Length: 511
Image 1 (cartoon, one colour):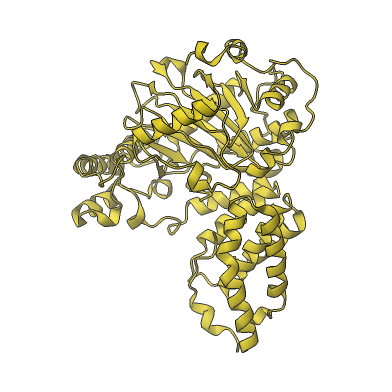
Image 2 (tube, rainbow, N blue to C red):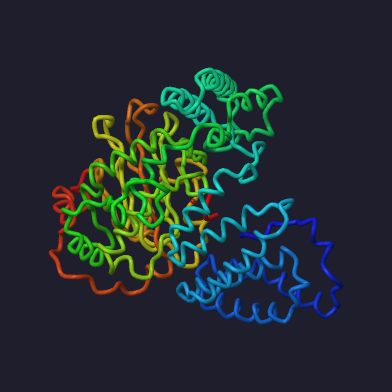
């Protein structure tokens, strides 16, 4: 939610009558409930309430609106537009209201308004603007305060290794990188023996550490690496950027380079997805695009979100490579029936450290369509690493925290897995580099345990793209273009799709 402001300029508002105050109070009292209706996919109710509340807001003079109220109006326009299937007029109005907040004096925090503005741009499929807005957000010092960062030892060691890599690439002074790496590893060793109490380990935030360790993390550039290092090479970004938005002087062909493999029979892949809610596409990216994404995952200082043993690079972390944008545009052309009505909503890279060898647990993602692509070379894998996709869907009104969270214990997750298998089936997809698993996003799914021995140089990395809203995935699918039943699948997976299960082998929006 965007409305978390406390602006100093509030006192500069003009006199507000009792009648206007009463209207503002009525609107504010409905704020949380409206968001709850929307996030629980009660879209008809959310649409009706948003429209009524916006009528009330329309009677309040602009001179009586402070930052909180402009954000409230923006959020209500956003909800109305999204509930109406991304209606352009309401979403454009949301952008105007967020713009009013961003035009306010710089002594107020605007991080959440920036986030919601970017999400609105995504719903409007104004992807270039959204990527630019998220890139700007990623380097703001107040996007995530230093004191709130989670000091997970595996992240500290990852960042230490990254400092050394960036020094070798000439993007960080060698002396500064060496000092930072030593500091980060020293704190990692001390923190490792002090996990917070609970089932699965979580780690203290910086504010909970000793002052000496906080000072060491400052020396370690913890949370600052994206600002302290030389940016990722612009020529490598521009190679994938559409010609209309490339930086001056970049040599880019008309429309940019298509990162998807033209040899794939995309029409057949689309039909398999439509008929079975899941399809597997091998050799998804071109070799050049695959190599660029792999290099980016090893060099870019955007793995800033801590999960249970692994790290995430989300858009607001700086994961805004134009290759992702180019892939989205290509998918909209190559799989039009699957993508119709489903704009890009979220994407991430996950990198698994030595602390996360079991992968991500059972969960569902709040979207309509999910693309999961593995990037790590197969030579780095010893075993496992694939994906299990269950046929069971969560209730439509289940909240994001109910379908996508970490289980308290492994026993809890095992019991839930058993309940899914009693209720339905599971499709087991083996790991293969450059293999995309495309499925209805709120099907429960989980990583298969794996062994990638060198998690520093060659960790398991996957790219995920989410499109559309959960509610949209429950509607009857559109007619797909003609093609064979198993086209688009890798050969081994096409056969596996026809075998019984027992014969087969084996996260707040911009968080």
